[in-house]
Structure formats: structure tokens, C-alpha cells
Image (cartoon, rainbow, N blue to C red; front, side):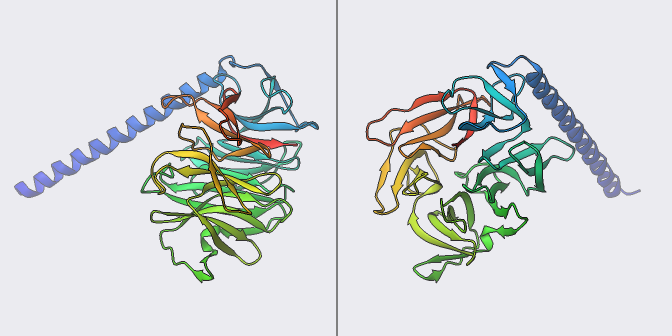
Length: 343
């Protein structure tokens, strides 16, 4: 055997050793992470909890419970009149959750081998109605006010909207089984002309109250970010404003709360802002921290959003903020994320 052949064989053996070692290390890390997560979920919860087998009759807020201990990661709800009171755990493990009286949307990571991602729609009695495979890690979900439509956004690549390298998939489905498909296939229009965005992304759907075929969302291409109004019947996305990310329409349909980039581009800090749909005027709210959650409306004059406790923690809290000038953020629900207000 020649020296070259021997050297090549040696390199191959070394490569195999490295691959085996890497896979073994990944397996050990995965098992360790799973055991740590399981231990955390088996410990006593930091908050007072109860068990629920159905959604309540009275108004409530549903969210992801981030309190360490039993129930961590589950969809939970509290009485709207007593947000700091006992939280009811549903037993549903959700990375992102949203709900109405008729439907709960749960986007989840299933820690199996290999890892998979799943969307499940649950009835008011918390029974699964339909489910489907997601193409990537959960990012956003919304349900239309009448409970007939469900939107899901996932990261196909990347894990942040501020990254230069991310790709999303946003799909709208009907509870009747209708699949409207990936919104990137809709026609993106501005001034009546179609925009050719080969690197386009769509995310952050919010459904228009009283108009079951209409919604708003964020569209982006390169450094451009737009608020678009979608029409399911016409399969169109029409640009109505610039610089609007993760829109959330108010219950009365008059305003859109969103994340406004401090730089005006697809990079930098995001702060809560409100767009008046009739006038186009924008008011930036007083929250100075970076907001990454899709904002929810508590009522027509107050918004809610999740904030991580710190960069190293998986725990978070829900804050509330009046849209009136000079208002200060207030802690609303501790150890919680991804809120939805149901009246």
C-alpha cells in the first residue's frame, strides 16, 4: 500500500472517530438536557396552580406557564379579573399558545429523536381537533375572533427576526379543514404593482374583527419591512405601511399595536408602538426594553407583552402598558409568556 493510500486511510479513520465522538457527545448533551428539563418540571411549582379539563365560562387570559417546577411549559389560564390569582394548568405543552372561547392553538416542540414540531388545535374542552407537522421551530400563532381560522409562523432557519439569516413559513388553516397554504405564495402588492421578493418572509398574522377573510401581517424583503393587509379570497397581500412588525389589531379594529425598530430597518431594538389605522399616525410607547413577543390587547387602550427575566433565563413575565402618553409599564402576570385575552 502506498504512503498516499495509508495517509488517506488514516485521515478517514480519524474522521470516523471525530464523527462518532461528536454524535456521542450530542447524545449525552441531549439526555442531560432532557433530564434537567424533566427534573425542573417535577419540582414543586413556584406559583399556586390547579388542574383544568376545559376552558372557563368567565373571561380569562391563556398563556404559556414559564414558572419553574410542575406545569412548566404548559398552556395555563387565569381569571381576567384576578390575573395574579391561581393559574389553571391544561396539561398541554406549548411553545406558543393563543385562544378564543372555541379554540386553542398550540405550537409545540416534541423532544423526540429526531426532534419534531407540531401544531394542534384544541376544543374548549381541551380535546384535540386536528394537528399537523410544522416545518420548523414555533414562533407565532393567532386565532380569528370567531375561532374559524388559525395562523402559525415557524422559523425554517434562524431563530430571530433581527438575524440576517432567517426564513419563516406562515400558514393559515380553517377549522373546516381548509388549508390556505404558505402566505409567501400570495401576491405581494404595492400601489397596484406586484413586488418580486425572492427572499421574502411573512410573519405575525392578526385577524381583522368582523371580517373573516381579512388579516394583517408583516412582510419583509432585504432590509425592507412592511405592514400588509391580506385577503384569503383573493390570495393577496397589500402593503399599507412600512416599518411595522408583528401587528396586533385592537378589539375595536381601530388600531394596530406593533414592534417598531429603533433603526427603521430589520436590525436593532424593538419598542412597542401603535398605528392609528384611519389616520396612519404612529405613537411609540414608553417601554425602553427590547420587545420580541407579539403584542396582545388587554382592552382598547392597554397592551400586553412578554419579557424575559434575563438573557440567561428561560423564565419570563407578562407586562401591561397603557397607550396613553407617559404611561409606565406594569408587571401583570409573573412567570408567563404568549398571552391571549378571551372575553
